[in-house]
Image (cartoon, rainbow, N blue to C red; front, side, top):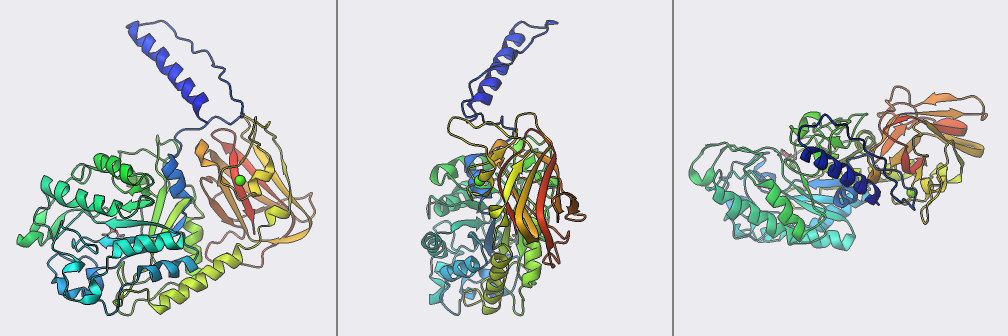
Length: 508
Ligand code: FUL
Ligand code: CA
């Protein structure tokens, strides 16, 4: 697909190289436009573009975090690493399959299980440490959580991965090279072996500080940019599990910059990796050179990441708002649903997740874009096997797309119905494999097909990216109003880095 561009780049590099070999030249080099065959008439990509694994990862959209471990039994959020292993004593058999079933009801496509937090306590059989569930005297503790979690996800056809804390407050080797080689990297490799189809591995940013450290009880600081040998780790993990996105430092997806479940309305997947990626977490960087999409990590319960007595889940309406402000703003949402002391997700969370799932399905039930006739103000000629017609916008395939002609950056898409429809939400998706392109758009509706009024209130209609959801009443917190009665809806893309390419549009 990108051959044409690649060829251009190579030609330009060759020209630069030959210019350089002429030494200090005042000579002007003219680069001739290349006419490379493009039988599919595909639009030229706007770089950067996602890697194959980033592209798959973005499609996961909404998934769970499961914080469970020693802290569930001590009531702490950050265990020091000096806990007695017998304190980990589940009151029932931990059941990762139940965790996943419960979040599936909420519309989540997968989950990440915390199998080692900062206390270093591991929930799978490993020889890298003695601080592990298998050493607890409780019989219920002897469940291989990593293995059960992976096999349950495969059975339920959900995506899965693990959170393994690089910071280890138990290990006497922490801070040395031996810790990285003999403990941390080994643990990652062990976990990668629980399935070559994992989608993400999570390394959090909290690193170094005081801890037990094998009885040393001191403070150890490391340089988190270099200590864990991330580039090497990344390459080795990809050999075992090619679709794993490494999260965090040196990774392939970025922290959204807050733990409150929101992304910027303007949100680019582009970033300048290497220069503190998190600093621009919420918004990305319009002309950043690296594809680094945002992930928003947030809590479903109100007392921390782990389960604590008396903790309560958020309301379905608040969860919906969070969904609109993350998934609906070009970020993924990883929502933490903590299992309790029995090793299962408690009933109150399970019921609320079900309620939310029903809300999501009913609000996004009938895609009215499918019954509209769609008119585009720019028609791109079809390629040998690819078409760029508007029906690609409603075929539920992420691989087909509508695109305007080259150089057209101001374009409208009008949806007309035979009879008036009630509209509340519009979902837009760019075909981001060609890069994130759109910079400004607006949405308008018409009751008669002649006069147009704006929709979306004060919501910034700037970037789209992988997915954007606009509540038409302009409110993310009270988005389900009485709706707008319309005979037509118009999406006006006003500015883009290059001709827009959209894979899907839905109207509810
Ligand atoms: C943070 C950790 O310190 C928290 O305990 C939690 O795991 C969160 C998701 O990441 O960096
Ligand atoms: Ca499509």
